[in-house]
Image (cartoon, rainbow, N blue to C red; front, side, top):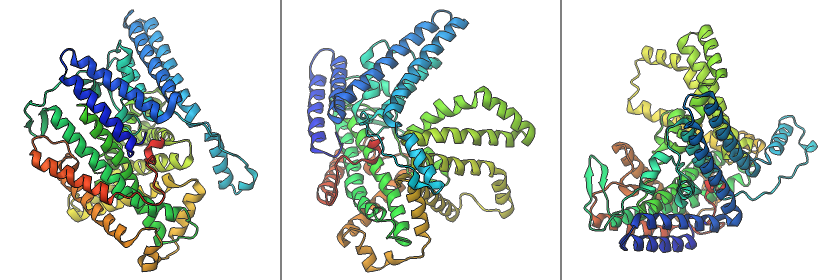
Length: 544
């Protein structure tokens, strides 16, 4: 079920009415509240992917729940005994590999074929490879909930979290419907407090704010702030992203004809399309969760204000990056292989340089896996993985060179012009990676790069502009909408948090809140782009 559909609106309305009913009814509100969220999540998964998705998710949640119980029981035998340690490890690895194998069966069955196809292209032997991708419908949201559930399993194995004895809690944690299809990737410690243990609130409770942090809420505030966040997400998706999609699809759909400036503009448009599409979906997810009193983690923090690739990935899809950092990067660095590599590099290059070389090597492993998570195609592995690993490794190894450069030139790193240059440079590098991400094959990606170098500037003519699929009115709406997005992002960056239009800051007067919601609703209904080729299900990251 797409977030942008009448079905979802009806679904949310029914769920919210049920939720409000159990909050006002006497008795054990907490258990009934959880029952509503559990039932809603199960129905949402069934409507989104059918009985297959429901069955596969149920199996994953059951194995993780049972595995966590087994790990905790094995650890309670004798904490330091070799037998207990081996038992915990066997259970952990069995559940981990079982769920990864399930993910691979649905998501990566075509990876060998895609690899052969790219190798044939690289060696100029395309005609020798005849291969048709195997069509297997993947269960809805399997990439996201697999990470969520395995993160919980790993934390139980490490002793960071206690194993939850009630199956429905683990199932609801991994399958909470607002976050399931587009993230953010949840952690047990941060989500469980409001998902399971949130006290039932009454509308008459006072809103309080201390240093910008929420210290008191009400049901009415949750509903209104959630609605505002949902409308902001719909604005990003329907008013901005869908218009940009027309330009991107027009140019990339005929990339051999469009050249030069057309391809450059399409690459820029796709960067903003992906941000507003994915960011809009996450805004809707956070808003929908907020309406039920549940706080999800932020997943974006003005990524295009980044001054380096490393900073970009600390601002873009933040929960995914944090997951791979905590559960892949750090454990990888502590393996015998990398500890041995670290010792060797420190002896050969010195302590600091050796550490940089080891970290760079780990980056390539981690980012290969992160790119592979997006899909079993080399365009994903490069565009969302190895390309960024190369840039971050190069920046890491070049740190002494840059330190010397700043010292000799006396350039102030915080100079506004220098910061602007760094942001433009980072955006260009990110947009190059997104060309791979958007392409169907490496051949298409390099064909686009080759076409960019043609020198054609026809996009700056009236005829060129008109050939991109948007009317002048649509271009005007797009320009104004991007200006609003920039103003909100700049404001959020200044105060260091998401608030204003898209935000969650409490204590704002109800009049202003109502006016903002009304303005966003008007913009979405009147200016939302529902034209040629519109597909309500086509959230880009929903495919993962």
